[in-house]
Image (tube, rainbow, N blue to C red; front, side, top):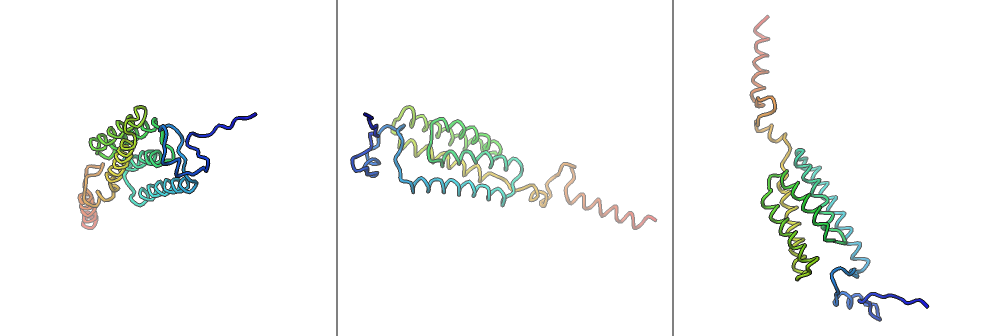
Length: 189
């Protein structure tokens, strides 16, 4: 009465290794073990928590913090259990924003464009999709590394080196001004 529809990868013994060794079209669902799914979710969570810890410990300036925030969806989508072709739009947009904020637009932009081109080879063209997929993920993850490596230290470090502030005076100049006022107050009744 009812016809059971089975996957073309299903075997009589339901052996997962048989299904994995005979992949079909790229858009078919992958059959992976429950443990693998849990591992991927755990890695994704650890990487995002690691990113948050990195930002808290580094205490970057506002552009650096926004760049790290833009790197979060890139990492989330790249490390997700499922990757879809349209994710590259968010990855490239967030990556370009972060690259502009950290001042590394050219190398990160080139890597993200290579990743986008590899994405087109994965789907819809499906031309050598496995090597193209490896290139996509490698380029995108390296670009995130460059983004995080380009995040600067907070402005407090620059102030200690005597970099000009908004007032136009260096830290040392203001100290001299305070010292001069103190001496004048001592000399004048």
